[in-house]
Image (cartoon, rainbow, N blue to C red):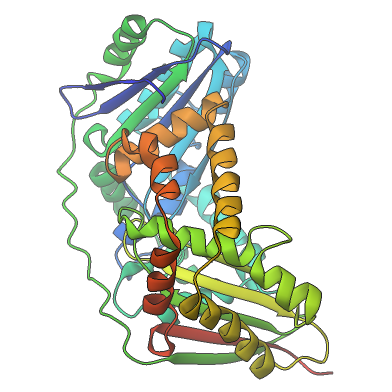
Amino acid sequence: MISFERHTLANGLRVILHRDVTTPLAAVNVIYDVGSRDEDPDHTGFAHLFEHLMFGGSKNIPVFDTPLQEAGGENNAFTNTDLTTYYLTVPVANLETALWLESDRMNELAFSEQSLEVQRKVVMEEFKQSYLNQPYGDVSLLLKPLAYKRHPYRWNPIGRELGHIAEATMEQVRAFFYRFYRPNNAVLSIAGNFDTDWVMSLVEKWFGGIPSGPPNVRDLPQEPPQTEPRFAEVERNVPNDMLVKAYHCCGRREDAFYATDVLSDILSNGNSSRLQRRLVEERQVFSTVSAYLTATFDPGLFIVSGNLCDGVSLETADAAVQEVLRELQQELVGERELERIRHKIQTLLSYADLQVQDKSMNLGIFEVLDRAERYYDEDTLYRQVQAGQLRDTSRELFTEANCSTLYYKALKG
């Protein structure tokens, strides 16, 4: 069990402190409760744009990286559908530098037209390189609006289309910042070998004076149950055909998530997993195949995808996948197979407990998701998954009416 302290500043900033005596470093995570699901459908990509803008200079610090590097630190960030995380590590002795940097950009960005134009171009180029000009890059751009009709998960964090970022105005950018990038919509999670009273005094010093923003009250359109199969087919200049099947499943907060996640591991975690063993090694239907959850806060997707071997039709591959899924619906998973998956999950969770940055980030993310204490429960909740629950979950998930299928065909020469 990881011990931690929780504090809340007067401006609403939640603070999670974990003392780790095994490291000379401090890990700092600032997690904002904003992702692409919070965007206006006509102005998408803003959460991801801000991931870049937050490194483009704040009110008092023109270049974020310079003082951090001088303090021996390193940093990065990521944005997804549900949250935005800025994380860094620094020697404990220089922790105040990290808090100064993070507090200044939370307080106010530089908001220059030059910075907006630079980062706008960076994001647009990333959109082109990662999604439009890369083999199979547009799979998610095609799959999400096929599977989702109302919920904002129907677009990627990068945005729904290039024009939304190209046309972003400074007024829109400022409004997005002052709505979401406020202390009452953030969690500051810090781990390291430090005195917690000392750290809280620094947190109060640097973050206590930042004004709160409006409450982030979500009223997102909920996705209705899918009642009939959906299908799309495209042709692209790629080496091999690809099959993608997406089934609606529960969100990250729900207890059923753990059984659903175990199912994905049974199907594709390691060389002995069912899809790998049966459809890659034995039958040679796919050259590569995987099953995974989007693991979103709101109800997400269970995705099975694979690149086909030469000479195998998409219809044959589709039928082969469904055959493997039907076995999970009809037969109980053996205890030996289930214990192997439990052991892999436990090893992964234990490894995360060894890394100071992982502990800091996970505590912060779980605080945004629900409560940081939930991080304690992960191993137990996975171990409680039983074979009967896996069969029941399979029967609920893997139905034809709940599936969106994409046939991604290679152009024939």
